[in-house]
Image (cartoon, rainbow, N blue to C red; front, top):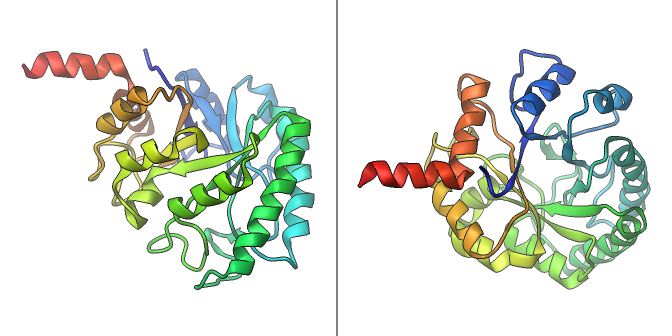
Length: 269
């Protein structure tokens, strides 16, 4: 039995199948489902799969850090809440600046105090939206070395500081350990430091952004640290399958399943 809720991003596995079939396959294997964008999907059809949805993108346009577009973040966050209600999604993911095909829509390579204050105030506003609707907005940390250059205030230490400064129960972190490993490392100390600020954890291995066991991160040790600190929330696989998608999902489950780890320990004695 897994002692965390395990979710899988449908955008990154079973990619030879239509999105609805990916969702059905993930659900049939016993995982919750994460999606990215919602505006280009048939929400009624997604709801009709009967799958449990863990998280999705919580805005369409705008930068948290920019006074000229922060209102657009708030406006489209409200639209995202309505979409989330149709799917029963409890967590909505946001970034410090808008992404376009994975890249910063308006790259900025230096952070300023104005950016910080604007992000803080915008998060306070969407936190209130979340409180009224019963959903949590999660600020995701990103790496700017490999995947997302030009996104300021993107490191885990920055997103943590933002979330803590807002101090709103409906504003948490989407702590992505793949991004954190590339940008910061020291992951076990990081998850301990983030503690109550975590809304959800996302994982993939480094390098390659594939399932646990394909790279340098020892996820069973991180799972053990999460148990020690009492984390019982969601861990989401936001990773490409290195080969067969079902095998990738099985590897993910093994990395975070306490019974699998105990069995491995017994065999190794």
